[in-house]
Length: 509
Image 1 (cartoon, helix red, strand yellow):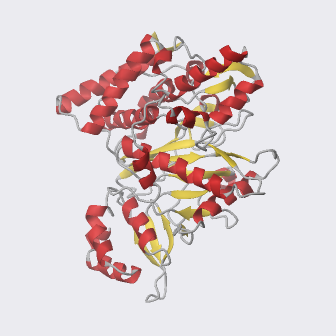
Image 2: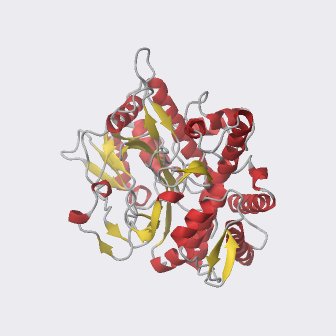
Image 3: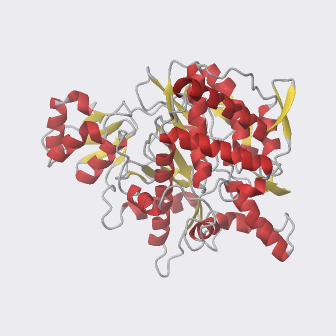
């Protein structure tokens, strides 16, 4: 009952070729993945993805969508041999998804770790851009954002493992109001209002305008506030993987920490039945848009059909419920990860309530708005000026010298919670406290004998066996360094590792 739970972030990156707007994004994305996977010393190029346990059309409401009516973008359990798809030694997945290169982080157990391996993905993409920038080559630019400003949106999805015993109706009822308001402290900011940015202005979140319904299975059409995809990648009888598609790609460590940490706490309260107030938001989709369109944070929405609240006030309600719940459970003795999230949550809400612009060091959308207002004041720009849209895109460029956020970070103008050395180590090293340790270490130790892998399996191709050997990893908090580190150190070959695992089934489960 803390912020700790198995979690992770999937980020699709925007992609372009300078001077060639007609370039094929699927081909470009494949080049990005292939360039990184085949670089000298990269040892994950051979291992593909194991699709055996994928079930993208299973709905948490108790049914499976028929394949005949599913949009092709939903059929993620079918391998496309023309698209690049690899597993990395840090346990992450790097592949082409919906014409974008995607980095899916390894499973972690804390918000700080989620930040670490999410930022490691930025370095992976930066390295790929550098590899494709050979003299005479057209090159590729990548952007950690969620819209091209012309009507297209691509996702930054969060995943949280939670108890299967929790009724899904409770998840929906209590999470919708929270997600409507969460953008106030976790939005990444965007120039333009509306799906195609046709109205001039600035809003809190990049994704909000693209959401149309409250609940649903789709992720690219009729996007829902609560996604019902029921694909746990774990023991299905015990776990549900909540797939969250409404978040923005965060650059700020503080915003990212709050996004993961506060959501984990709210899920903990839902699991424990500790949300005792009716915080139901009237017209959630309309309310989501209204809050995003008001950087003054003064806009109000109807709550529980009888009162109006600002987004900050609604988040205060969740904070107070979490504080009371944690006090009841632990008194003042919180673990460091939970204490950090609660302290940052209170601090950021207090700052936003006093004056949103005072949160420029912590909150992504405020950092961006402050910079844009500087350009507007210097050059006399209206919000309709196309130069501001160009700056918005340049903000998220992954290159250290070109990305405007990266330059502010280097100048010390935003708070950084995870140091650069820790992030660099996470590019190749997996987390040690989830099954990602087993997956990533096997790829590093036995690169020529791992045929494929997935979140819940590693498949070996060893000469001593007539067929591929699949090792299931259905328990996300097994396969850790403490469980299998000794076995991996003892084994000189994958064949020897399989023999040791057979002798020690609990450690390899």
